[in-house]
Structures are given as C-alpha cells and as structure tokens.
Image 1 (cartoon, rainbow, N blue to C red):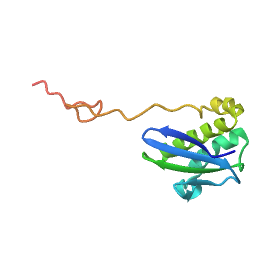
Image 2 (cartoon, rainbow, N blue to C red):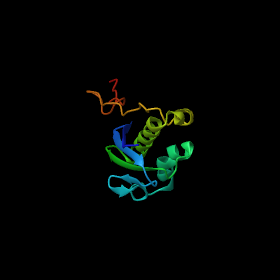
Image 3 (cartoon, one colour):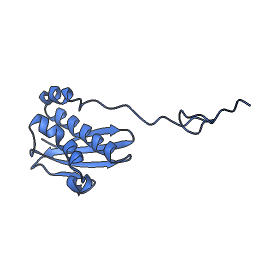
Image 4 (cartoon, rainbow, N blue to C red):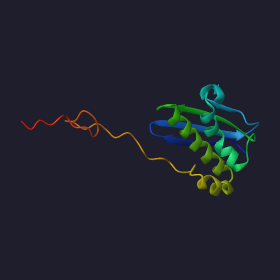
Length: 128
C-alpha cells in the first residue's frame, strides 16, 4: 500500500490527510495529535473512524489542517481519515456511513448583507 491522499472539510477548515501502513502514529501539523487536540473529546473524534472499522494502530496518518476553529478542524480531520479508510478498503464504508462520518457537513457562516449590521439582524426600525 502506498500513501493514500484525501481531503476533509468542515466550515472553513481544510484537512489534507496522508495515510500509509504503520504503527498508528497520528501527526497533525508536524505535532502529535494529543498535543494539537488537548481534550479527550477531540482526541476521541480523531480516533473514531479507526475504532468503528477496527483498524486502530494499523495506519500512520499525517495531516495538514488549516482554517477555522479547533472543533471544525477536528471534524475535517475525521472526515479525511474516514475517506482514506474507505479508499483503502471499500468494506468499511457502511460502518462509517451509519455513524454519518462519510457526510460532508455543508453548514457555513452566512454572509453579511449590505444595509444590515449582521447576516440577518436589521437596524432598529423607527416608526416616527
């Protein structure tokens, strides 16, 4: 198996995932994933695709992620890893799809419109 290259996106975060066979080392922006995502919930999200497909410790993953906040970044990484696992073995797709890890979340921040202070908020209306 050579290096599998996939991409994951969430809001404004973009994660480029490079997966190859190895001992389970996950590196994000040249740092260990436990350093980059310090809380347990975020680390669980990174490992979720491996846990569902029972492939924990079989692949080395290198990720370049940029943009957005920490939660958007971790969900972009999760989508990229899930796509890489499916590209490696298509039999993993039903398990990942059942947990909706194969779905790209399309929700983005709505743009600000002219003549309004925010996207939907209006300036105060004065009747008189």
